[in-house]
Image (tube, rainbow, N blue to C red):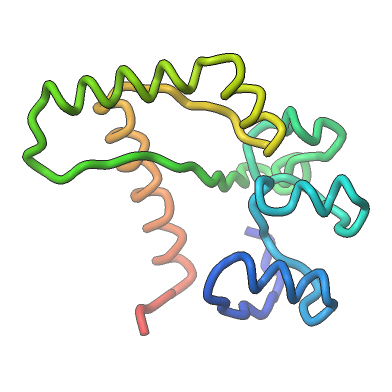
Amino acid sequence: MTGVDIVHVPYRGGGPALTDLLGGQVQMMFATISSSIGYIRAGNLRVLAVTTAKRSDALPDVPTVSETVAGFEANDWYGLGVTKGTPANIVDKLNMEINAALVDPTMKERLAVLGGAPMPMTPSGFGKLMAGETEKWAKVIKFAGIKAE
């Protein structure tokens, strides 16, 4: 979105990349808040911005990328899926129990400490989220000319 030329260095996961960032082998990375917040709070990493649409409750003084680059947004999220054909009553039960856990004050507090925000939703809502993210990132991949190796 900015035309900045950044060399992508592929890693086998965020852990090794974060280790190299802390060790000075790479100069920057897009890390998840949950993986880096301890290092940020300890003063070992300087965070420049968060990639979410709004500022993070865990790092309220840190600007968003979109405050400088209009329209930029990249989120990390986690979800639970089951195999196709799982009976609806099982899906509904799992959804009910997971959503109950996500609104539990202890769970919400623990997630907040890690920089996370619970996103309780219905199975169809989660399907819409995944479809929207797939469409969004497919456009990025096409625009960037990214090809599978």
